[in-house]
Length: 409
Image 1 (tube, rainbow, N blue to C red):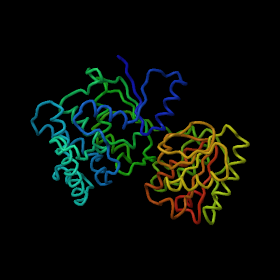
Image 2 (image 1 turned 90 degrees about the vertical axis):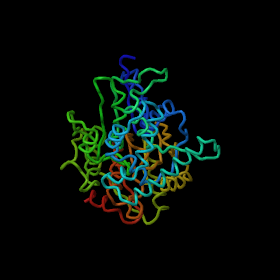
Image 3 (image 1 turned 60 degrees about the vertical axis):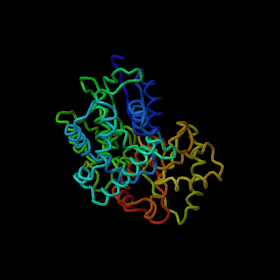
Image 4 (image 1 turned 135 degrees about the vertical axis):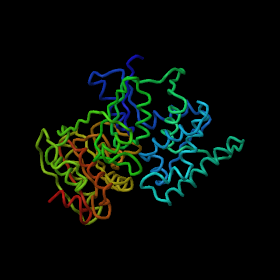
């Protein structure tokens, strides 16, 4: 199509949400997908000889290296230095050499010799299994890491040329909008630039203060744009929060501590009730109090959406099991981003709620032992708090962590 456009988002829940919202705004004919779904389809199309299965247990050190912001430039230099035919097989060899060359990996800033060694061992095992399968060993367990998709696609673009559509033609977009871009790697964004038409029209939207991917992504806009080699761009900072009330926005910003990028909380359009901190001696007390309060809330506001947001899946499961015994109406345990987008109570871990919003949010057990008080933990807490539209409660079993104490001061 002459004006093919797409929205690329990070998670499935946000994809489903945007897919419903855009038509209601009169925006039609725009494809909405996640990076993982988009890249998987293209890798299978361009590299049919590679394994189709993905590995869910990639060591964090390997993920960090394969998502490293300096890797796109290393890939470009490697391809320029290595004469080879413009074929998919050559692009596969580029991928193998890039992640299998200890000298290249050692040049990456912030990568320790131990991480290089671990990545080399993992890569040798991965590529050894792939070679064994090619030689006829049907028992060889082959896999691709999620992070390999971007490297392979970028290698194709640099070595072979344009990516292909399903009919074998040139794969091109007139405009791409990328949401939650702070959790994309420069290699992934470079691939998306590579499928834009000659005008290179792409919108990158996100909040670096809500960066939740420990292995990749960017904590500063300058880092992302610098890694992409973008010299001219328009950077617009939204200083107005249309979602949350003033008390919620102020509290959420305070949880970031020194990581906050701005000296003041964003402007808000509405005031609202103060953020409440509820402390309990044990989880059973917290479940009982929440159950009673939620029963009254659902009775008073049957159309309200409520999210109980935990730091991790285990805590979410603990509270769901406790609350389910209280026979609350429309209580849902959200797994794999399977949101109903309907009135009721969703119990979920924070990694699944990026980009979403709820009328009421309860942060579950932001205590010293449960919610880590380190930069990544503070960003996750900020994400959880900013999902609330009207009111926010924070619960703790025992003493709250430092981020909550500072925000309540």
